[in-house]
Amino acid sequence: MSHWTAALHDIATALVRSERKATVLTGAGISIPSGVPSFRGEKGLWERYDPAEYAHIDAFHRQPARVWQMLRELRQVIERARPNPAHLALARLEELGYLRAVVTQNVDGLHQAAGSRDVVELHGSYREVVCLACGARYPWDSLELLAPDETPPRCTCGGLLKPDVVLFGELLPRYPLIRAWVEAQNCDTLLVIGTSAEVEPAASLPAVARNAGARIVEINPHPALDADFTLAAPAEEVLPRLVEVVEEIRGTSAA
Image (cartoon, rainbow, N blue to C red):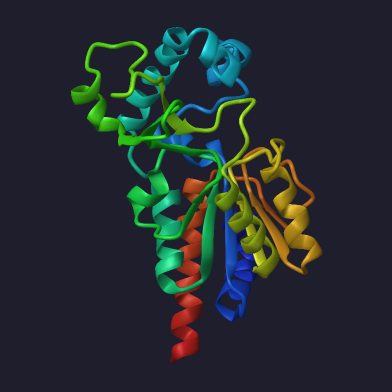
């Protein structure tokens, strides 16, 4: 029996009995088993690419072709990635009616690919590119038709195209940020999964939720929070088991 089995039962019971439902906050850790590297830490992307030179909006304007080299490489990794059991488990919890929303710092779209419907993307998404001159948006796949041989690719207006992701030095999109705050303030459980919760403003969401009366559950092999429940294990192991326990309790309650 896992050392976190008892805690898992308590968390599942709270989810089933919840009136306000749970909100989820995810970071890079949930996607590592899918083959998407983290940005920080050992073997992180920033060990190979200095973020000041490759991931800052000023660097993009100074040397767009150089930055696009890194962006295309990351896009290739994301294209190969598939949802893992953690993503699928969260989609199932939403389907069962126990999640308000998934707030994610990831840009890989794996939550949507797994079936999650209400996903708040704090840092944008690789699904689209946006023109920095005229604001036009295009699906990333259309680059092969729009600018197949250009690096950096350009819009039909001549402006620079950039993936619709937030680089250092850019403001987060307003609506997702407001949504994240609303979901944190109105849940009774905040599941924090695969994130060190060091990068603002996502780092403040656990405090926002706690101040509104929510319990904090951290699922992370390397815990970083002062949570009410801490499951120091990989999300791809914990979350499918959480779904099983939720369904067991749900079935017992219905019977």
